[in-house]
Image (tube, rainbow, N blue to C red; front, side, top):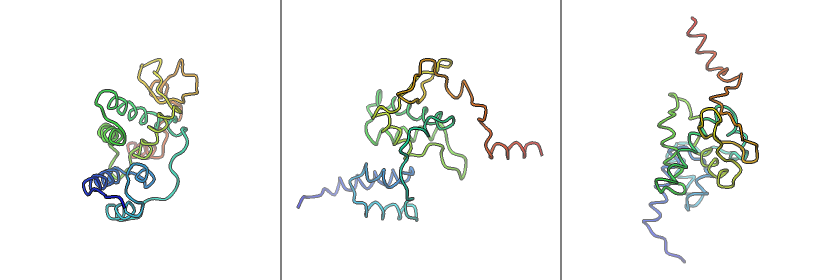
Length: 182
């Protein structure tokens, strides 16, 4: 029987707590924390008061390439890459630090979820590590944005410089416009 270190177990519990507080799904926790599934479930229920959400994690790169999610994903991955390249951050700690900085720049409205969840941010990093997604500079503003690694991105224009015709036509913006007109 192997000896377990109380200190390393406490560190794993602290990591799990931070991830849960940032909105991590159970699958992310199981992948990044060495605690048993039962302990993670118990910890999640204790912190959130409910069972973790069920269902599969995002498995397609498509979500990251649509207009608004692309802007948020691009901001996050640029922060992440900076932390990895210049601050020596690695692994899940780099994802957590980058996500906290992302939330500082793009705080969700009261009662709303952030556009980019921690689980999606973690998935995005994995897509970059597997070279399914990459960054391409916008030919207009020169900012770097998330693109499909297999696409031709020579004259890429970002969603900020080349706004899609349906951008901003959400139910929430229509309701805000109706309230402003009243």
